[in-house]
Length: 227
Ligand code: ADP
Ligand code: MG
Picture 1: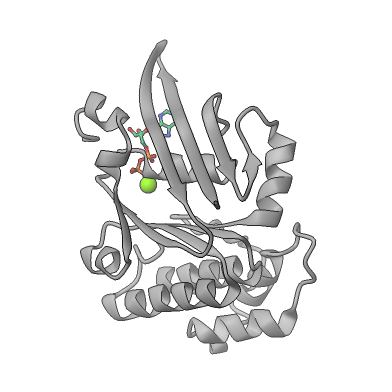
Picture 2: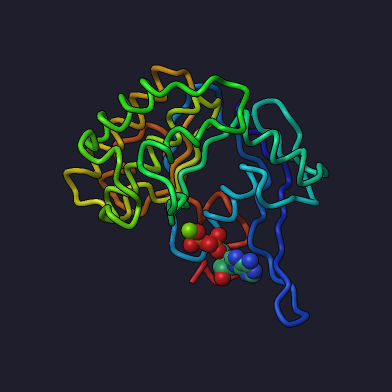
């Protein structure tokens, strides 16, 4: 099991008042599975990915990722866990501005125990259509190109699990389809599981396993359907 969640509850406290963002009784993702999550804005999808990546601590319930219990662990332990096991394609990319496309991809594996492979990084950038952008800095690339660099950076790490938050949000339909195909192909080749969040119906429909977040997350009822 790559993801095994039980009785996960996350609350945010605003102005002294706490409100539930996540209440997930049970959810599992098996090895090699590719899952698309869809749901309205504000329903807690990014929060769930943050918990799975170990960026956000969960105090209640159990969150087992790649066989490891994250609930109750400290930040340093979760950082190490993430470096080895999870690649996260953020909605806002989080590219390092002072580094070129190629360097950003190489940096994707920096903190894992894997050897960084320059040839592989170049090949991945080529596969996402950025062969001629290796030496470009993020500020010299379009948003769509930056998003493809972020995807190549996730793939270079060969993790057990890739999390992708709206990975095609800034791409035109042609590139969106290509990027999802590439992501899914690379996950199959490397035997890693993929959990992607998307609001694009055609992207979600291309996945065999689809999760309606409003049904998965009980806190959405209390929040008025995540509006
Ligand atoms: P989604 O990704 O589905 O759009 P998010 O997970 O980003 O939703 O956010 C879920 C809810 O939690 C939203 O109502 C948002 O305003 C709130 N939220 C997100 N991050 C924080 C935070 N750090 N502090 C307080 N509330 C937050
Ligand atoms: Mg989000």
